[in-house]
Image (tube, helix red, strand yellow):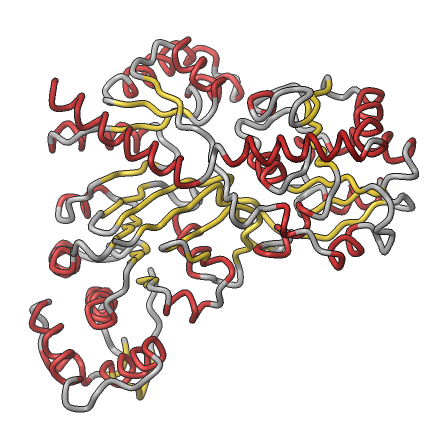
Length: 505
């Protein structure tokens, strides 16, 4: 059995004005035999998720992990991800004139298997797939997508899937631009290829596709109307409903200065969530918010971290020299994450000036990058830009202290990754940070925007190696309680709870 495990995935897309954060901490588990549908409007990050998993160079993974059967996909090249079992059906398949569909697939199969298919058996594989999908045999002799209708292009993607037999198939808006007959044909192909050995992630704008492909789970991105459809769809099909609670719609209404909509928005959100058998929150403060707003059947889905990648053993002399600007003997404080105004990174400027014996490193990028580089110019500070994979793990583990001045965090995954790396955390006593660790055990909390307190706490840890080591060990032990397997097992228990409650209703 194969499992796709996405944890705290954060992705930026390159734009004309610089990187723009699209995905801000996606968590998803899909097992073989399951079909998960992801719905959402344009700009909500659906295709970004697909292309980031596949390795498109326009999309930069700034944090988190994507694993397929415990293989970290983010550390692999595009072709290596395909060999690991990943398949992406594109929204806009390109034409390849002069190359027949059969030859294209034979080349792809050779690249995947490391050897060419046997001449005697290959035609049977191709014809078998065509028969299974009820497609004309002449289809395989045509040039790839050349002169194909929109429906034929999408059916060709499904045909490729049938021949290549991946573990995980991601279908990026396969229904886009199709009339009803073409949609049915594509859906029939997907249904024919459902297997206990294969997982599907189906990305779509429209509910009509789900009339022909029965998903096991529907994920609504940017809820409101889409969430309402998810609720109605679950009730119509009489299937268990599990929802995730992130915020009340009324909070957005207030920010838009539409106060008269506050009460209707509260009623709307609460009523939708109360249709679910289970409502999951990823932080204690969101659990409290949900209960406060009248949402029932609320549970905490505990935080999770990759304790294998993020590990004290990832510490390297090379990275230490890089982050300290070739002063590895000096204490090192590090921040990892998005460089943006809401992260309150300016709160570290005074401590940097007051603690010349401590080196500081900012790992990440964002809209405030240029301004922060200018503000910290001439100080003992290093800006690395985004790091991923092993380099990111090395950066965490090579630090002495992790500084987290942000007051807007709901989960604080970067802090948890630092703890998994055996690094004590100094964080603002706000948002989700206080729920990460115990003050005085795995790190210290400070009053937001209190530079004096930051200097004091940094001094305690940088001047006392024994205290730093003791807190680092405690931080690692706490992080080990929140490994991926535990989080996945917990989610599966919640699925079971939803099924059980649905059966009693």
